[in-house]
Image (cartoon, rainbow, N blue to C red):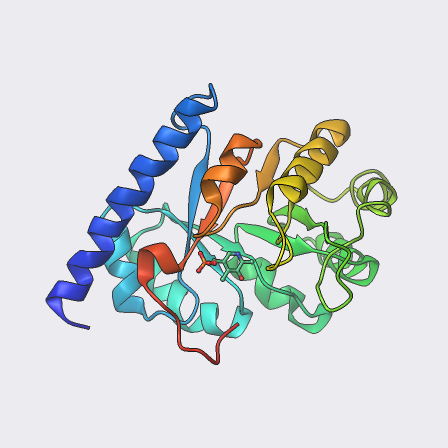
Length: 230
Ligand SMILES: *Cc1c(COP(=O)(O)O)cnc(C)c1O
C-alpha cells in the first residue's frame, strides 16, 4: 500500500467522524453517542494499522478466519482495540470467535445461542452479543424475523442467560432504509437493549437520526472492496 492511500484512510476517517458528530448533534444527541465501527473486511493489516494510527479503535470483520489472520498481531500493539464480528457465525467456529471478538453482532438462531451458552458453561468468557434482526424478512438474509425477535431475545437473555446487549440489522439493498431503522430502534427500546447497530457507508446519517448507537462503515473509510467479496 502506498503512502498516499495510507493517508487517505486517515483523511476519510476524519470526514466520517465529522459527519457522525454532525448527524448526532442534528438529532439532538450527544456528539459521542454513536460509535464508529470501522469495517476492515478484505483490507490488509497495513490499512488497519493506518486507521489505528489515526485513533480508530473499534473494527468490524465478517469472517472469523480472516480476522484470525490479521487481528492477534494488531492487538499486541493496540491492546485497547475492540473487535466486532458482523458476519454470519457457524456453530463450529464459535470457540474461535469468542476467543477473538469483543462483540458478536450476528447472533441469529437458536443453535448458535445454545452453542454460545455451552462455551460459557465450559467456563469461557463470552463476548457481548447483539441479535441480528432480518427487518426486511428477506429469505436469503441471516437474522431473526421481527415477529420472532421478542421470543428469541427472551430465550437468549432470560432462559440461556447470554449477555445480549443490542440489536443489529442490514436493511434490504433496494429499499428505503428508514423504516427498517425505525423498526430496529423500536424493538430495542421495547426490549430494553441499549445497543443499536445499523447504518453503513451509504445511509449512516439516516441510521443516526433513528437512534443508531453503532454505525458500521467500510467503503467510505477503506475504499472499494474487491468485487467478489460480500
Ligand atoms: C460490509 C459490511 C458493512 C460495511 O458496508 P459499507 O457499505 O462498505 O460501509 C456493514 N455491515 C455489514 C454487516 C457488512 O457486512
